[in-house]
Length: 239
Image (cartoon, rainbow, N blue to C red; front, side, top):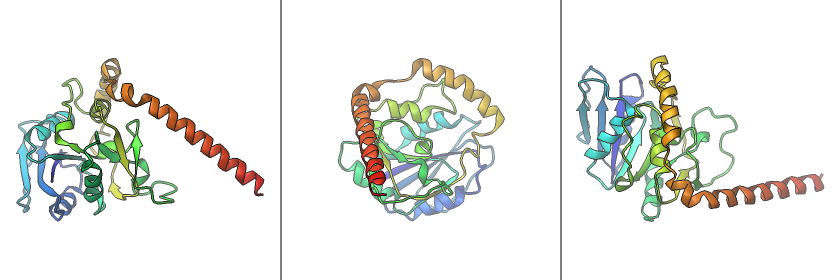
């Protein structure tokens, strides 16, 4: 079962749809909404716990708070500006049940309107870096959550957790989501914070993940380069 954590400043119109969709998922045991806005929130779902904050504690501290409060063995951290495909949690659970997963996120191709779309079915693939859409919906065993340092309030929290893992991270593929990227974090005041947080992160970034899987990443890239080269050669010969 999943504990789902959703920080919000109530800027996204998708929040109500998201909570309603989660309420219908049997694998979701609780929905922890971190309310960083002064306006109250009310949801009919008995799964929802609302943690009201006296002031905006920002997204990464909200993730820390939600993970600390989580009651179930699997943790899902979601943006408040998305609506997920119905199979997201079932597909994620298949990976988590193996017991050999650090965390699971999404590929950028799953953002609605991505050019090119999805060309073929690939259930999941190893992830060696945190892609652009990874942090909008990510899951992990709750015990794998790594608290984010207080220096990172808005940005690089997903990078911190990703690169702190000691088991292989994965990307779920071919799950469509409807998302409005950076509805809140795209505001000018948050972007200014981001520049300072970027400097701090790259001065202190964890290396656990690449220390363990860096060689595998390089080998995978080499094999893919060879495969693409063979495909291009065969295409030229076949003309």
